[in-house]
Length: 224
Image (cartoon, rainbow, N blue to C red; front, top):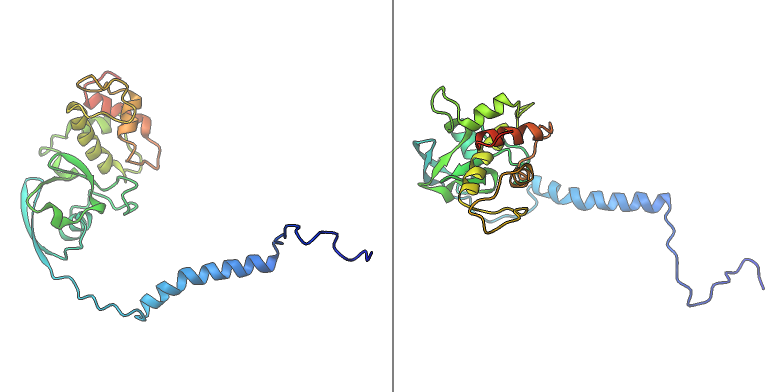
């Protein structure tokens, strides 16, 4: 028997050998597949016959003031606040509804303003971080965040506070969370675990979570 011939039979499973060449070729293919469509769009190679959207008149009630705006109907509420009304307290973090920095209140309910269109809230009451304080008197949650150092860089703070306002309202209405143990009670006890779960949609990259929880407990009237 020739010693250079394989001893594997015809039914033996084949093996795939990973070489430097296959890695380079695979990576180059993936790069082309991701960059060529974008390059084609940028160069105008894709024929898009969809006509531009006509501006729509939107009546927004923001922080107690009426605003009449002509907007592209595809404009998000966040971009409307920041770009058209100079209400820059609501931050654009991920712009995908994952960080919570853009949280505002719509008729008292918290919502990620980057995921909703302004035209969807025509006539509704919108409250941003700028509308929580009464003149020089801070909202109890704002004061508690200051007292407990519930922020460091401050980028997420406006969303954290607006979310906490909405969260406390939900708790008072008896809405349970994923970790609520006794669903027969009119309202869940706002333990640290409850608060962390209910605020889990708001991310703090500085990791000031213990101070945020303490601030929320104080504002809710719970001893810390």
